[in-house]
Image 1: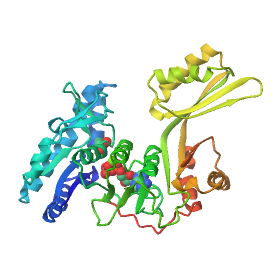
Image 2: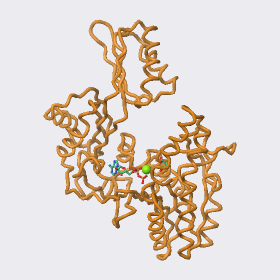
Image 3: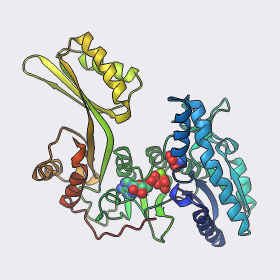
Image 4: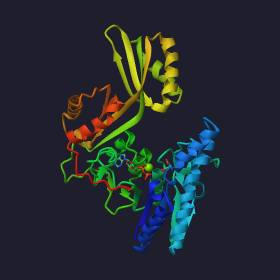
Length: 412
Ligand code: ADP
Ligand code: ASP
Ligand code: MG
């Protein structure tokens, strides 16, 4: 008999019918004798709907009030799912983040979990109940409701699995596992039987939103066995593992990630002197704007250009900051571009394969796609491109690195 934490995402609990079928699934796990803790998201579209409502009242609501509002979505699904379980003759109890308690820091709308009080859950499990917990939310030391950032129910599930020392954390979603790239963009994407934590972390941070980044960090840190599966079709899903599978030749590239919502800024003609990068990027970071790719290029004439990318919705603020920097440093000009994307190839196999980056560049050249920026790490190469080439680039690279399979997407 094992203890399993199962998380069901928005589409999986998107209607009463779907909540009923999730209840059937949980009931069959209980029949097999497993103890089950369930984490649920809000019904699909609900978090966006609540965000829109807030915006109708106030352009930039305070993060504290946003958290009070957004946390309601998950509370609805916990109660409905518990009712559906009770209707099936099971014992079930729903909890919101504050009741559990899932204690977080006070960084509203992007809070981090500090600890979880698991006593009540253990007591309920011992009494034979299914425990249904609201994902995405917690409470800070002062009792304020917090939320964990978009996609945060994944992190609630993994954190609970770590705290309860569960045998496995299962993330049920609308695809049947982690694919070589988003199967909604590339038909021939293949489901991976397994992927390492390291690769999954890169994929998630480079734009594959199938798992929230922090959930993968948590699972790696606390060694939580983590699996991504479909709520709608049976199958083994994808296991996130510590080591790559040694039985098979490790491919150079395991997956391709992409991100559309980025923007690029360039400040041209600044002095090529010590401290100039800090003078440009310091004020950006002081304005709480997260910077992604940074490229600095010193010209032969003693001037310097710095280009960097930010989230698209931070572009206007970042451009304002750079205009001030431009005055201060007597720079030539500030350029902005909000029609870029980032495409990345990821794989632990890159450590042992040569020529991976050059193959990527050659593939893009054959497709006549211009590369604007390049950044690399040990297990990834990312390029910034004109947004209109994103799908073409992802498909071309998917084929070039031998990732294509039969179109087998199992989806909702
Ligand atoms: P949930 O609401 O269940 O949390 P999400 O929408 O957050 O679901 O995540 C599932 C989605 O992630 C899929 O529908 C798919 O479009 C997308 N996705 C992006 N990259 C990948 C990938 N490499 N493998 C599988 N799914 C991916
Ligand atoms: N409901 C939240 C969101 O849409 C959290 C989640 O689903 O994981 O981002
Ligand atoms: Mg999600």
